[in-house]
Image (cartoon, rainbow, N blue to C red; front, side, top):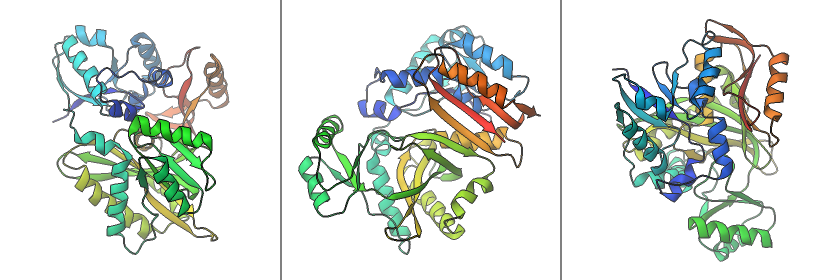
Length: 404
């Protein structure tokens, strides 16, 4: 039976999970991202699915231009159009990330129309599974399953400045502090000495006050960010879906992904990591994630990793579980773009960028279209630039691909 889904882009959902409120209001910056990238699910949803947006005229105008090139694109709905649709189809609610807030939005959508809409139940266990404490639990389990592999020390969770200082006195800097409910480079604080600065103390006090505890761990000499993307069937099995090779800005914020075949993406890792190690980690993660998430959660799981250089050595090691994203991820979007929209043997980049000045994204979009004209054959991109969401003079967040 083919399931039709209604997709909804709700970035920054980790803080919504922390809040636990159905009427949680994201920060202004996250609201702008939600508005600007609301059409992103068009590129990973199935043709028979729907993508829920609020600015339906803008989305329809954008899709109408692309429909001749990509006939496999799904359709869009708004709350208003869903209300008056006469189709009798059963849908499944599929937000970017599960939270009390996102599921409440679907309940309001259900009340507005006559359709059947299956909405997942929010489970209390989801909050713990979303936090970094579970990533620590997974890393601890990986150390048991891979005893011959050199893996990083476990992060330590602390509830006070004194506990953090105790850790710092028995280890060598640099360190990283992390809030439990954050992702994509947010909620991090680097410490480069063995003494806390006043700004560090203020950050710690604020983070502990908001989230109850924070973790501290040794900062590694990172050489490459990457992730393994998985999917849980909710029946006890978590399956590997693909490799994500991505970049981050100086402070760890996500910047973009490599596009191409699985073997092409693997080449970035296998240049420094043996294929046997890669396979061992993948299989071990399938086991651990199935144990922890398999029966509780249905959906995407992204496990962020990195390759790092050992101190005073040219050798590279793997950190197999930096953080876990219990949601759809940009890495999974990159995997799906590569599978569904790229011509074989073609490669490129998937980029998410931000411009503060009004009109700047619109100007850059025009330049990119002229510099990299789009070439598409049978729904597959041969080369060129494509914005994955509509762009206006008020756009600030920008998701696009360039294929070579």
